[in-house]
Image (cartoon, rainbow, N blue to C red; front, top):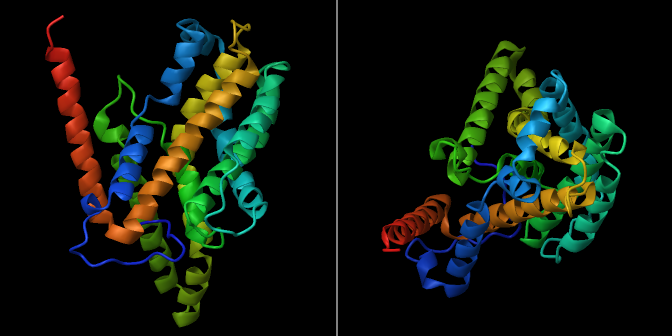
Length: 304
């Protein structure tokens, strides 16, 4: 089951290909560049340097478990607040700069009270980022009244971008989407089975009415495991002594800008899928990936 739906999407004839529309193919190339950019962990390492790994080792033994629990709670509490604070006005220009400034201010004192202080800061930062992601979704023509848009917004936190040491089959944009869609399929199957076990048609209707909430909860659970790893790295960076520009404000600004980029790329893809179909956009994206791989190989093979 695919998630997300653009407001007012128009289905064009099958013969109309994305390659025939320069503006849309340019948008796809931009989305590809954003979604296939280095991961947020790689960006943090570029700022802080190798000491980041040492900072990770110094975190409390229970840090991973506490962060995962905190991330899942923060996402659950933040999504409704974030989307509910925006007017449902599709195609409104996103205010990415203001959200970045607010997030930076939130992170400025994030590490002042140590690990516990960062756990307190996490829901605030998560809400700001979710609001910015929803703002970007709205700017791409999506209606915030559509319950599946909330799932799309949460899904953005699973899009950390590929890492050099990762298995591409697990970290690619479409592979991540396939994983999340499989979660939704399994949830739908479980809900259907539960409805069948209930008393007749009334049970099925009850499940249908609440399925959006159940799918969102499962989406949050699936995303939290990935996002929690990234947040752990973020906390480690913020707990380090300030190195040059690597302050809490800088880390938070880098963090939200990364997920703003992921959101922009993701919702551009979703918008194009409403026009050309999911398979056509996926094929065009794969073609860009192959072209990128060929160019990278040529650079490696070029004489020094």
